[in-house]
Image (cartoon, rainbow, N blue to C red):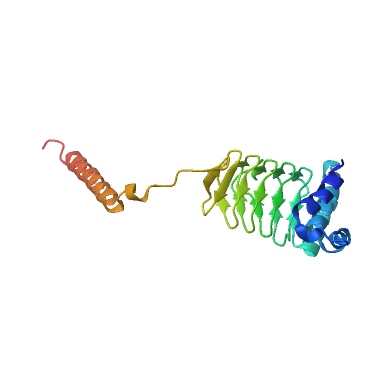
Length: 218
């Protein structure tokens, strides 16, 4: 099965709204995620041929028409499904495996501080919920799920479910991860007191050294 066929089939496998007698026509006419992927495939092909400018123009036209921005240099496997899609951004050095599902508002972005590989690597069979942000040169393992609205800035192993800001693993291979024991939290007041005592000792030592430097004979 070709990459195009897998992208096409992914829609009907994962979107119940497409499973109607005229679902195929709805997809062709109104599925912006599918349109954006088609444009990306063409732009990526031309980018691989080292053709200047045109790939980015295709990308920007697709962004204008679909609300989805995919850099032509990104590497995306087959069977990708972008549901709804508005506001999705996929950066230049992003790598995405096969059979990945993304919802609207997803950002696969860079930190802006790195050169070279600065966008995430997404494994296969990953689901990324609406509004999730995966930032930096990190890896999301195969079969993982990123909850809606999560912000992920650290690599995630295979088979994990991540939620929150910043994203934390709540499930691993279907089992709940032990939650933080709120009866055993550190006392911030005690930590602050210890830090003040330490700083005061440092100040006293510095003052003693200064006095000695001014009056070395005393």
